[in-house]
Length: 300
Image 1 (cartoon, rainbow, N blue to C red):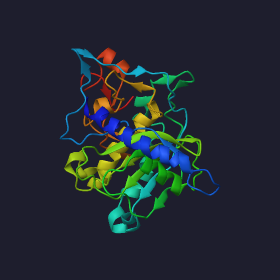
Image 2: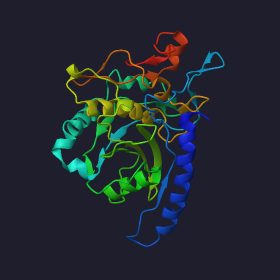
Image 3: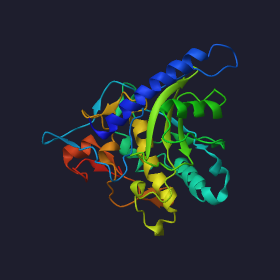
Image 4: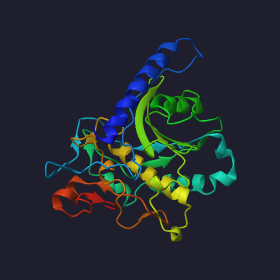
């Protein structure tokens, strides 16, 4: 069992117990919301963890459509969770940098690396990516690595149990990853029957295992550069596999998993340059025009 599926299996077991409890208690008006969180997918492994191979038995493993939906329009609502987000000396350029990324990523050549993937309604729309207002919760985050149900419950809390239907809520913790072998993940679930996508990101300040080693000349702090790289990873997988049942290969790897920690220069988001990993393209792999096992692309 590879790293991604091992972690996902553990997370799914934890989530199942949490979901049963949460769903069963939401009966009275004004009570806890009914939440149902899926397992975590798209783990970004730390750099010292063995990466998923793009090959299987000497052949390239292509992404396969499993009949689930892709995103045809996307509203992103970042959530900043933890007491340190109230401290400007901690946030530095992270909040404004992530806001800039999400506000300008739609329609970029980087976003279009996800455009070849489709469902019965058409291809991923990489232009209609809009950003909603940030949400903040300065209460303490859970110790250690939270379950998907804990993170979805946080989304429920900051949205007053009424999230934007089908929106993407990336949740940024103020806590370091500690002994966790990954930097971030994404998932999907429902809050009072409303479908949402969500992600979770550790604080990556000073974390060499999750650092893309972006040049300082790009103008971003180390912590922001690290978050931006894994933010691109999870956003791309959310676009192509939002409900965890659309595009992944025979080993369970999604398009960003197959290119984790591989780079080919930088990408342009708005007027800024960022060091963000590439995404897998079946077309590039077939044409042998990509990098990293001929299937990874950073622009399209």
